[in-house]
Image 1 (cartoon, rainbow, N blue to C red):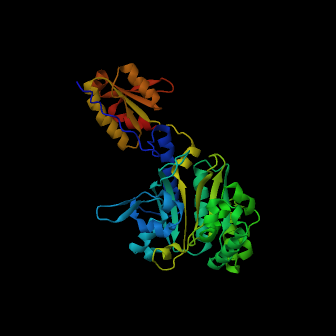
Image 2 (cartoon, one colour):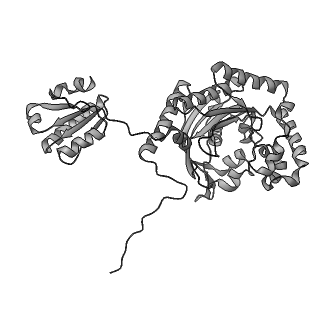
Image 3 (cartoon, rainbow, N blue to C red):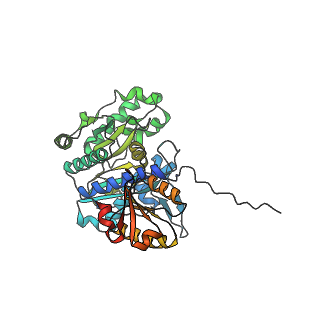
Length: 417
């Protein structure tokens, strides 16, 4: 007889199944983000997981690694090129334009969910990964940058991971400042072209700012003496950056200047920032963002200022560390068919009253009580034939072993007390 065993499918490389303590840490990050975005009155938005490829190629730039090497793009049955979203900002900007959200500007938006990039999987980085995201679209004032940065700082604090995390801050100046700086960088690095890495030689004409954050030893030798943005800042750009730093100081958010922190795409302006740590190895950024005043125009809309940030949920969860599953308030232990039927109603009533309840479905009394103890519950409600006949249950305080018979109609006050 032919062996027709079915081979068990394996997870796709670069994806993950999140369970147990890791899943609880993941959920804790999302729940904390949701609570804080409400404090700051950011409006929740849900986005499509895929968009027309042009949304990302136009916003990220055809020559970036994300577009040229990492996007999951495919042709649908109608012959249109679609792409699984590699980041949130482009889709949010598209939605801002196509849904008439300009009427709500300045618009504070927050979202979270899965993103997709075909890159080499490594610690904390996956091909399907998850981010939290916050944006303010339609606000040109530096106070918008400050609000987002203070929000990010509070998030990290309330997650309990702020220690050892540093806010690195830079300015890219306004359009004129940035262009003058760009020309100076092209001239400076051009004098050393032959000694630069192949990637930086390629970036020299189209994206010279990216050379400043190169990790290649050949490039680092020249970065220290490269022209700095401060020499090219207009008066307006200086005032903008000063307003951001003064706002952070007033809010008690510590920061340090990082002159080599850049954003390569031309639509980025003024503030660029990263919250970094050495607790995740070489890839130390846990949250990053900046002001992208030119993106709406790049997608065909009117000139619209905007600023935002994103953070990887997996990386934040790694810093949070493993979290145990939430404890139960009450464990219900029924013995016998009649008790199990009655227990269904008792459990439903207790949960509707706001108590976290676990119920042991199987095993003898010893095994069910062991499960009750493992649940972390304060009380066990034991229901057998004798108790059921009397309209009562035995309530046992698991920490002390004390127990007493309680009428079923009086369970809630005892268990909540």
